[in-house]
Image (cartoon, rainbow, N blue to C red; front, side, top):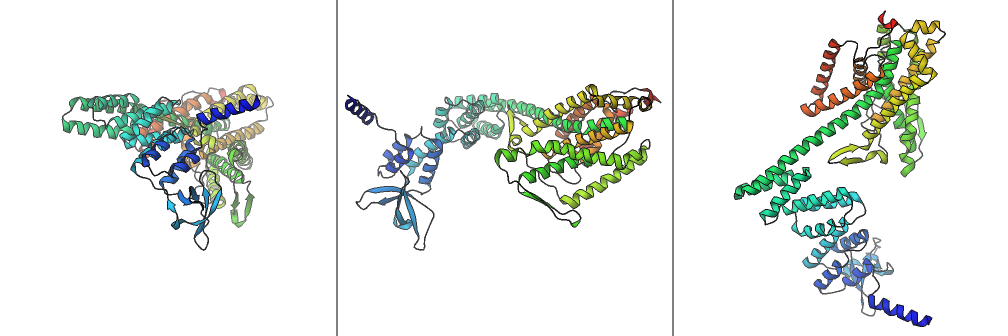
Length: 559
């Protein structure tokens, strides 16, 4: 009975045929002399593993497959290794099994040739293989390439894959590519339908193609097609306006979030101590450089030479997820480094200059210059590059609006910081002391509050928040010695417009200035002019409301 079942199974397998691998199929196909039969067999491979199929067919097209003869006269398909010896011999391996065939000279063996019929079949199979790639980016690139080429021969592959595609972005890209190819159709009805599709999709890349279609239709006197193409261009123009507006708003929110993190610490220290700290920008740079150092430690290491002293920090040479985790470690270290810098500044200089605003301004400005020079001596005058970890390097596309993950992270983290600082001020003993000293320093001191210690801790907190902002900025731009100076003026403007010492006012002011700055730059197309208009608007606003949006009232301030 067992022998009978085995015989039946064997007969079924022989009748149905055991699926061959692409290597085995191509190994047999290259030996055929009939190109039409070769094209038929290649076309039957369309459902095979796309990665393997693409590699094999490209190797065949590029002349990387050869035909050699066995001792008995049978032919075998082989590939050649690159290990040439003194006699120009290379190792030949069987294409189907990968087993070593022997040592041959490439010039003495036959290259597997292709003709137009076979290359056309290969092209169709390669198109489908690219479309079925598991990598979304690769699929999208293949789809966009097919659409931009406007080759009608690509249309069957796109139509065949359209029903199988499951990802929404890829579906939209296929629909767009099909419409672009249909713009080359001989039927005006098909072209008009394609124009309508591209307009409904808001296809930004198709604008030049639609302009060409409208021009050709106008020359041919086809009014309906001209109307359809111009209507599609009008719809796309409206979509472009929406994309630009949404992108500008997003960039404004991310810029406002950075200003918020920088200014929230400044608002507390300025409101508490009345000190105009011109070195606050250098606390930002400390946080950014700390992030750079942590990145180098996780990578190949770092060599520094401040004042001629060579300091070598060994690297972990981490890769993959371990290297990507450097930014998580850098965030608390950036806060700590900047907080310690602020603590040293407060204990060493500022505590001797309370109630002397002009002297504190000049002193901290001098400290700012000294720190900038120290950064140049330590890290060099040129900017250093901080690379984003992979989980912050991509973007999220919604209706053609790009949301960079690094900027989304900044916005979310800024919200978390505002919430944390609010909880600190309202729910902790330190927050109670800070609010008491801000409202009436003399009365708080009479009640036993150690105002100097409160000043010290508050200044360290504000500087640490600036260090966090520096870590965020390192993911968006380069890090250099004068990094802090790019944000210090905007930070002071944010604090003053929001109302000195008022966190809610600082939040509204930071987001408003960020959105206004990016909007004017987008409208005017000139970043410098946009910045000037923002500062002019702030000056006019302060002429109207000198105390800012929200006035902090207390007896000590009114006196």
